[in-house]
Length: 378
Image (tube, rainbow, N blue to C red; front, top):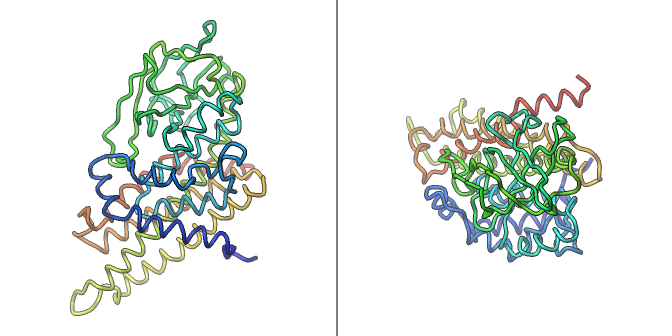
């Protein structure tokens, strides 16, 4: 089995990393993290390259790339920050819901401004009493004439507050646990929608929110597919979300480990470099083994998806393993850098914060293991 990228895939990877080094970089990333600002300039550059259309068919104005190219993209976007990658990926994998399940009118309305970088998407699943148990959502959507009327409380909805964002809301349209849920498109300037950005230790650039819907009215045409198809749709969506997250963990962990190696080589104590101490170099060698294994799991999942096959187990395996590896690498980096690791200009504290979030966001590690066990027939 040949694990090398093809020439085309390698050229894509090289171009993306060159872009991240020249057009984004460390200082820009630190600035937006510290100021809790969305990286508008970088996002516009990405839109201008046409990369927002990576998962959009050519006939709809996109690039129609396969999941392997998508994974390479997500890995590169996370080079300096998982949050930077999330700023791009969130709209990308949420847009697939419109691509795959939207009406022609919905595609025409939403995809052109999205591809131009003028519209963002946010997906809203969790509620205060429905986190890992996503099927327990209580937010209701009731059809009243030609409009859906929504009432409820959603939380951990990243990017919902951004200008021009459209929220894909998972709401209950009947009492059936799974078949009673639907996906409804709600523009974030709709009357009755109260959005509050949350002061979290991560998602500083993208931002995550809690919001309340009070008699929010949208046209009945804003539903994706038919009533009751929301659970089915969201599960397909999660394959792309979890693949992208796993790839981004690998990308950021690569930088965190490289930073640790560089620091231990130049830092001296007791008359010798830190990298010469066995405890540290063995720790970094173990991290390298784990990181390479995580990358292989990511591209195994991506390759299976590219063949059009179901990859629920593979994306969960990639996500949980890559999240654990990213956290371990960042934790070891914090130890190696000592007091300096706490300073923003060394970046390690950001890697550490964001890696810890990766063990919960997008489906907690415990849930991923439950999914894997279920797929094993347990």
